[in-house]
Amino acid sequence: MSDTLIRLAHVEKSFVKGKEKISIFEHLDMTIPRGDFVAIMGPSGSGKTTLLNMLGGIDTPTAGEISFDGQRIDQYNERQLSKWRSDHVGFIFQFYNLMPMLNAAQNVELPLLLKPLSASQRKQNVAAALEVVSLADRAKHYPREMSGGQQQRVAIARAIVSDPQLLLCDEPTGDLDRTVADEILAMLQLLNKELGKTIVMVTHDPAAARYAKRTLHLDKGKFVEREELAA
Amino acid sequence: MSDFKLVWKNLMRRKLRTFLMLFATLIAFAIFGVLSAFNNAFSGDQAAAIDRLVVVNKINFTQPLPVSYPARIKQIEGVKQLSYANWFGGYYPEPKNQLVVFAVDHTTYLDVYDDAITVDAATRKNFMTDKTSAIVGRAMADKFGWKVGDRVPMNSNIFSQKSGARVWDLTIAGIFDKKKENQDTNFMFFRYDYFDETRSFGKDTIGWMMLNLTSSSLADKVAKQIDETFANSPYETQTDTEKAFNKAFVAQFGNIALIVTLVVGAAFITILMIVGNTMAMAVRERTREIGVMKSLGFPGARILKMVLGESLLLAALGGLLGLGLATLAIGGMKQAAGNFVPGLAMTGDIMVFGIALIVALGVLTGIVPAMSAMRMSIISALGRT
Ligand SMILES: Nc1ncnc2c1ncn2[C@@H]1O[C@H](COP(=O)(O)OP(=O)(O)OP(=O)(O)O)[C@@H](O)[C@H]1O
Ligand SMILES: [Mg+2]
Image (tube, rainbow over all chains, first blue to last red; front, side, top):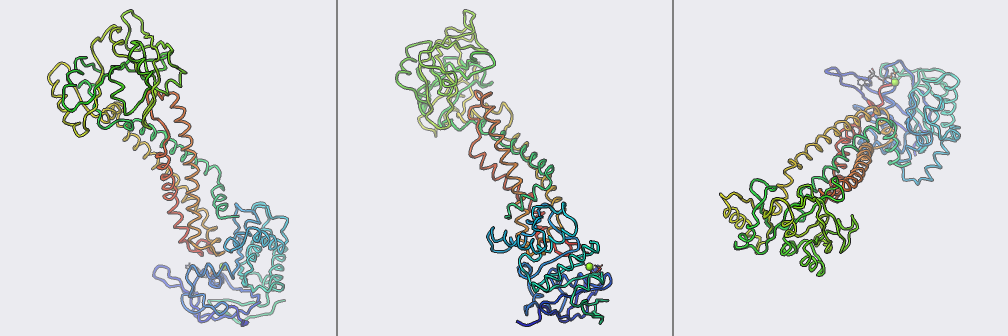
């Protein structure tokens, strides 16, 4: 096993809007080692979400290569990408994106429905994941009965329940106040340090970026050299 | 948690909306069930023998024919057995409880209907010897608890006796059973000779004749010959097979099959639009959640199955409840109107067709939203954040 988990080579991404071609990345290279915790910052519209989506296989590059563990995921078809995501990727969104009609435990269980697990094994894994985010006592609560911070912790539990290597977070604390944000960020840091999850986190917040091991600045489709080490 | 539970939770997230769709579906299927049962019953040809001919007055079947006709028709080649009957207009014990009662030629009736009903030897003997005797169908006898030897005062809403009485005292000679599955036994018959000599008007006329042929291939030829024999007489005849006669009888009520098709069709098109539109709306509301499911790794095909499962579940719940309601309603109507609509029942055929309709409704209302959910791109579903 090499130390590189993700490699982007000559990635190009553009959208066609009417007759106009909007180019977001013209030539992007990037390497993310296994166990990294990288924050991506940059002005609005610089392509942070687009990059994260390509890393997670829910968007595809117009040209170039994206490899995960040596596999060219840019060549996968829809089916293969679905399978790959359920095996290797956990998403954490700004607005939690929980299912309103499911309680916390059921929300966390959702990704496990894609796995060949028995009901009791699923139950065990769900309990363990809720334990990690300190929400074991909220298992039966519905999203509308929980605070934003609690909902985001449920979302984190859902992202880690099937034990993926990669966590992709798009402004995970963008909707939370400072104290709660710090809690969430500390939790991500713990997942990175203790469980070895590789984390890519998009954020506007320099304080949030300080929880990462390193920060990349994206501007006009390019990384600009302003790397700094995590605090 | 299973996919089924997920589907169920999705269906139940807006209870009022789901309830309204269920209710509309239930009503449509109840209408379908009840009307189909009536249509089946009125098609009324299940029990009719193919080779039996029925001769009625050409004007219409309520007009009488001379009692001299049977003897003349018997001479026609191809006629094996012939009998005749008159409608009695019976009720018992009170006018609202009308019964199907015929006065029949006792010497021939049982032989002509030998393929359809059966009586024991004692019954036949009683019927031949006692002028006031009557034979009752099993279903009717059970309903009133009548036994052999009982005397039944049978009223008529058409005829009266010369004495002025509207009641004929009949003695139960016996009970007949059906020989064929679909044969109705909710009727009775008594002797025409007794009826004819006691009634105050209409003497020496009969209602209709029914005859068996030596070969069913002769049906057209014999029917034509009978009608030609009496052409240009004061009492012209109309001869048809029993099947055609039953159809003509039903035609009085209008074209039932067409009405059923139109009403049921209208109900289903309405349901299709209401439920189809509501399902599309429900799925559109969940666009973001579908995007999340896909980002978790749920393949498009599985999302398609879930949405389709939801519309099928809805159709199945509403449809089965509707068919159940129809079954209950038909049971109730049978009590009330069974005498005049024999064979009114929720049949296996109706159920099978109903279930096919459920599947069709479920697929048609779900397929468009299911396809769009399957094809939906994750990034546009999640919205750009
Ligand atoms: N589907 C699309 N069609 C056309 N243009 C798009 C599409 N998706 C993104 N873009 C454009 O790509 C650019 C980058 O978008 P992206 O969402 O990645 O930015 P971002 O860095 O995440 O911004 P923000 O900080 O506001 O979230 C923007 O100019 C956006 O308008
Ligand atoms: Mg963004």
